Amino acid sequence: MIRYLQRKDIDIDKYDACIQNAVNSRIYALSYYLDIVADNWDALILDNYKAVMPLPWRSKYFIKYIYPPCWTQQLGVFSIHNFDSTLVELFIKAIPKKFLKTTIQLNNNCNSELFSTKNNFVLGLNQPYENLYKNYRKDRKDRLKKFLKVGYKIEKNVSINDLITVFKENYKEELNINLSDYLKLEKLALEKRLSPIIIGVYNKDQELISGSLFFKDKKRIYYVFSANNQQGNKAQGNTAILDSIIQSYSNTDYILDFEGSMHPGIASFFKSFGSELETYYLYAKKF
Image 1: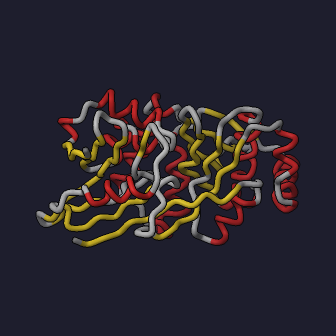
Image 2 (image 1 turned 60 degrees about the horizontal axis):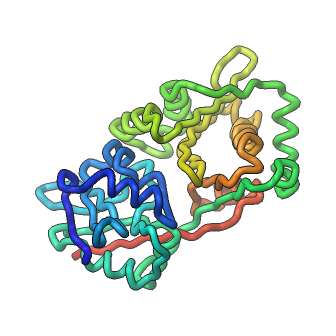
């Protein structure tokens, strides 16, 4: 039996245990992640938390609707057992009618004819770095060599505020992110349970020119946020940062999750590291 529970009525320990032990676990669905990014969220629960489906929602003009919060690529159904489209569609049908509009980005296990597809890219890190490097595309290897010749420093524990400043100064007009979403990103980056990793590239004047924020759970390293200025782009700062993550976590069972994209240029960049396509899904409906 699938029940709809408001956030205040959810057994959070059981809910998070389901997410963490799910065959398709994603960090975005954890309660403490959703508590930061979602205006509100409730959940659909199967039996005694055998499977769950978080429902982030907000209200506008007294109309409630389900939406994908910023910094949250994949939600959907999460189960401790393998499942198929039948279970996913049962969850979709159980969404309360009070939500007059529903938009959900579902993880790659949630296949159904009801959904359209979106592209993600992932790289398994369970090989020696030398093998992973061999699978880089030639142009990516050339760009990495270019970075190494410049001699800029790669450093960890970069301030999230410094990284956001680089982003605002170089991408603000293109991506139009709300102030509230920047504040949520700052909170996420300070949440120790997400194992945040913030890596930056500094020029010879100790100025931050490239930076990236990653989160880490038991299975995946998520490439959540990045920024470059013109100097960082020219020096191939993002290439160097991603290569440093691949080096650090090579020969482990981690998967590097690039988080998309449908943009051809960005997709090509991710593929150039030898990553593989992983499809996830979009469900959108007005009741």
